[in-house]
Length: 245
Image (cartoon, rainbow, N blue to C red; front, side, top):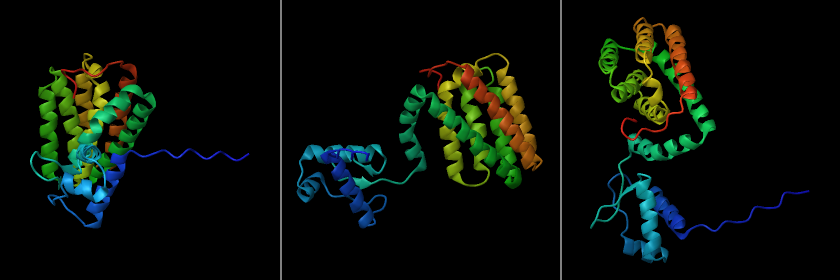
């Protein structure tokens, strides 16, 4: 017996307008700062009303693709990985708060991602990289009695390691992943004694990077993140509006 076809869903008018605007940007090879047609011009061009145009513009602006300033025509936005990740933040935190499966997938992805990067860091680090990493670790150590700051600097240490191979996307993604997981991390870092354990594990990772021992660095990172993942599972902490990252 054949499967019946799915019903065709009607698209919102604003979604169609959004797609048309994106096609215009791509077809005309418009770049950051280039001016787009005004609302009135788009209404005439597409034969739709102002509400559909404005809703499409708001969606494109919310995605970080265009800039809309009062009294000016819309422009193509400057491309920014930080901007893209920032747009994802609220959605990811909402999903993670309501989906245990997604949380497990994110922890697994982080383990694979950071294990790979710490191996690269051990092989490619410079003396300047070691200085930067040690500074981040020292700052975290100084904040061991300030949970929110300690957690923030924990992410900074991992971000520095991710940035050593020289690809800025690695550092940006590492920072974003840590920020999403930090929603579940607050209760863990507050437990007495775990701050010192985290610092000790970072010292072991640092030593392996310093010694250019990629295997030891990977093993140390796996132990560190596996221990952290266990704590995520044990903690029922919800986002802290004051101290969360």
